Amino acid sequence: MEKAEHNFKETGHKVPVWDVATRLFHWTLVTLIVLAFVTNNFADKIGFNWHKINGYAILALVFFRLMWGIWGSSTSRFINFVKPFAAIRYFLEMFSGKGKHYLGHNPAGAMMIVALLLVVAAQAISGLFTADDISMMLFAGPFASDVSESTAEWMSYFHRIGPNLIIALVCIHVLSNIAYAVLKRDGMITAMVTGCKKSGNYSDAQSARLSHQGLAFTCFVFSAAVVFGIVYLWGDAPFL
Image (cartoon, rainbow, N blue to C red; front, side, top):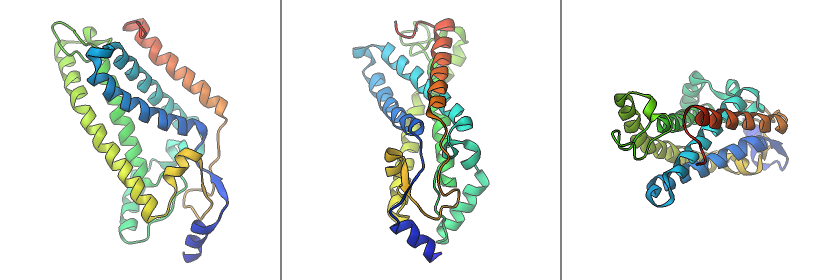
């Protein structure tokens, strides 16, 4: 075990972890989440339509991530890291001082990623059916008038409390990554920028198998076309 730790800390060789598509997805989603808060708080000044477009873009990104989680690089595929029982075992090993190093998401971090994607997706979807004023539809999502008043009210309620859930999960995610970087000497945060980690004895793989980035572009274009197409055909014109 000591030898593995030595190799992990001191080797200068780099191995691929995250492909360009995954890194762009991550930082673009971070930017859009921040913009969602900004456009919501200043909707009366900059126009509510910007907030709606921001939400559509988030939905397109989440849809892309679901596709990339099936056909993407090895560290991005859900089948390789979404393992609930492994997360429980990881927590027990971590508290006993036997936590392993992972090239991609560790089992606990994987569950956090899933939770974030689900809450962000739910927030964006609820926005499609949200109405700030049910009777007058002053600030309404594209499908608010197509559902019952009670459904619109429920969606509106979740859309109001959703940001608090997102903030809580983001804080846990960021603090966990900082702690992991300090205590485990793991370059997860740096890897999400550079795409690489130091080579080492990782439990899940020694290097990522990267998918062709042309496939990522195709998945993103398809995701954006589906989301904005649905909004345009059954809701309203996204950019008007």
